[in-house]
Length: 121
Image (cartoon, rainbow, N blue to C red; front, top):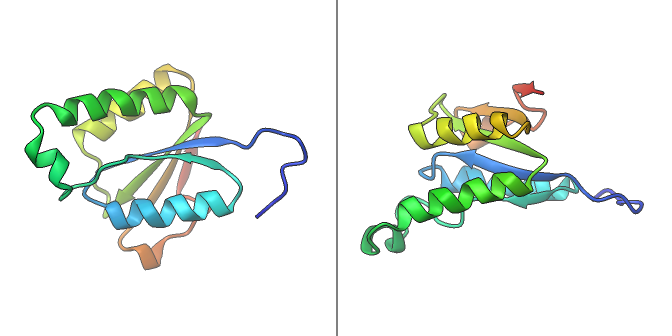
C-alpha cells in the first residue's frame, strides 16, 4: 500500500448492480490496496435481509446516495455491460454533484483491468 504522506486518501464509492457481490468484493480490495477509502453497498442480491424486510431496498438506495455525497469519485462496476436503473440513477446523481465518474467493465473477475475502461470529469 502506498503511504499517505499527510494527505487524505481519495474516497471512492462503488456503484453497480448488487447481483455482482463477488466482483464488488474484489474491486473493493483492489481499490483499498491502492490506498483509497472505499464505500460500497452493504447488502447484495441473495442476502436474506433484502427479501424479508419490506422497503429495505428503497432505504438502502437512499443510503447509497449519501455515500456518494461523501465520496470524491464513483467507480461504476459493470459486468458484461449491465447497468441497471438504480445504477443509472446513482451515476446521474454523482454527475449532478460534480463527482468524478470512473467505469470498470468486465466479463468476469479474471478480465478486470484496474486501470478502468473510462473516466469522466
